Amino acid sequence: MRRWNGWGDEAVALAVPAAARQLLVDLVGTGTPPRDADLGTVVSAVRESRLSGWSGLLTDPLVRILHARGQSFPDWVALRLGEVGETPDAVAYPETSVDASKIIAVARASGARLIPYGGGTSVVGHVNPPSDGPPVVTVDMRRMNACQSVDSKSGLAVFGSGIVGPNLEARLRAEGFTLGHFPQSFEYSTLGGWVATRSSGQESLGYGRIERLFAGGKVESPSGPLVLPAFPASAAGPDLREMLLGSEGRLGFLTECTVRVTRLPECEEVHGFLLPDWEVGTDAVRSILQCGLRPSMLRLSSPEESRTLFALSGHSGLLSYLSPLLRIRGIGAKSCFLLVGFKGNRHLVSHVREEVFSVLRAFGGVSLGQRPGRSWRRSRFATPYLRNSLWELGYGVDTLETACSWSALPRLVRSIEDGIRSAFGDASERCHVFTHLSHPYTDGSSLYTTLIFRLAPDPRETLQTWCRAKEAASRAIAAGGGTISHHHGVGRDHRDHLEAEKGPLGVAALRAVAKSLDPDGLMNPGKLVT
View 1 (cartoon, helix red, strand yellow):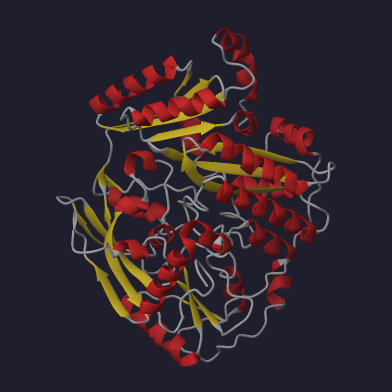
View 2 (view 1 turned 90 degrees about the horizontal axis):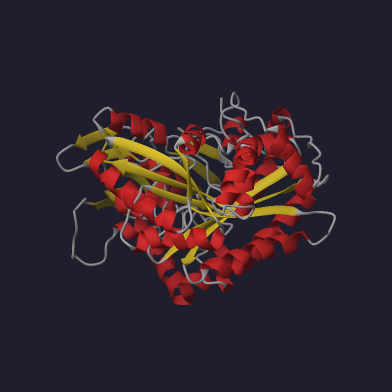
């Protein structure tokens, strides 16, 4: 059963190795395990629905709680504290486009607002009901999950938008294909959610982000149905798919998605490397991309993240054992861990691997072989479970991400990390901050920053500290030439920073698009733009 106040399946728990626990004590102090609210108490406090009596709408308090929050840090604090706040008045489960159209009609007749819900994995407030206003129906799309067709000749497949990652991949693999889209939320997030937030998978360097994979689809909007045909390319005006990509449920229900799929690779490899330091590592990654090489993945961890990763994985002893040899090779305390992946035809993989390794060796890289890659593949979707384990030890964990040019990258990393640390202020409280780049491009890269800190005795104090850190990081991103979101979307948490990136006219254009398909403002109020 899925956790109601944390990540993932209740039966899955990741132990924090002793070395990692000691590292956290040394870095931020000893955590105090919090006392979490009881689900029964939370259920008993849910207010009465304002939509009882409508056919097809579920108003059970537990169902409403399970659809009230996503996975952002404020969501976690609210759920663990037991102060969930607003819940939807009802939950609906459409199975067809006709069902979705009927739900829109019910909303119009009752004055309700509609929140599309995929896997509930949003970390920026996409699924949260407004704190005031009309009744809200959360519309869970996961029953719209059928595979309608797989065109092996064209490499196109059509799915209901509510299909979750593992089921989508299983269906494609039965036909010898893969979509290749593996966000960290893969186990629970949905195809429609990936499109609505412009998602990136862990191997987007090889397969492409969701905007490359999304070929077309169908939308049930308050103004009527919208069909987006799947063409290889078109010059027939602006591409209407772009309206849906990143629209965050503001335009209607995305009911059907046509996606570009790829034959299963003959060969899959993930190798580990150590680079001398962060500057050398980023130069090496940039050089690989700018000379035209395309491995399936490049993920470079800062020295702080590298040390933390090895502690959390229980491999700190291996590095200590190898340290004399590594020092001879120029690898010391400032070393950075790099994962590099390859997929595809065996001959092509062999050629690209040889060329990439040549670049890495030229930058002083030392190969760790495929053992780190095998370990990463085993745990690639399990890492979020560490949030549960660390919380139970008294530590909060959050992440944020951006993307910027290579020229802006060094200063932006420093600004983000310094801004987060300064938000903690009091010298008695420290924050462990570290960064990696994981979606590089020829002209720049994404940056993914993690912060770990002690939970305060009062959860409200914890939330206030997080708000200061989030705001400091967001200001640093805007001032340093980064995007407010590379792959998490805008939602509610990033909305106030959107105009700094899009400009007033750009935001006005987004509002105009939303009004054209949703003139009465029924869809996901308060998300993306107000």
